[in-house]
Length: 142
Image (cartoon, rainbow, N blue to C red):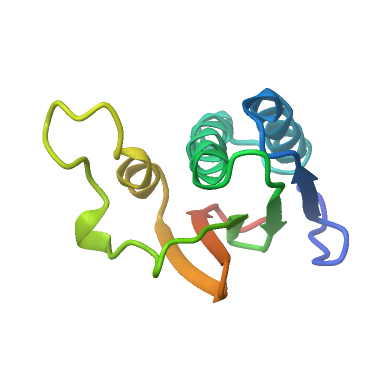
């Protein structure tokens, strides 16, 4: 029997210090939350990688500045959002979501997230705030 999904009860909302020492806690929080509500080990693994990529991006964009993590469950999706501070002029356009060249040591995070999810959006929420939202489709509850 699937748990009844109530939007007010099935939201994980956390804030973490902007240091790499918080990455494990963020991953563990998301995976623990999903294991409790969504019986899909593949989704758990993909979400863990997505959190790792997005949280790392947030930390690299503004070291030492807190970032937010929110996971919401609906009847047919898991929506994961990371909110961070950035001084960039605008979110990167989709066509620049890859590395500058094939041997570049960085620049693959959003491409990885795009491959692991059913949808990803990057938007500026305010002058200095970026929100990256990743959506995973899930089978509807019986």
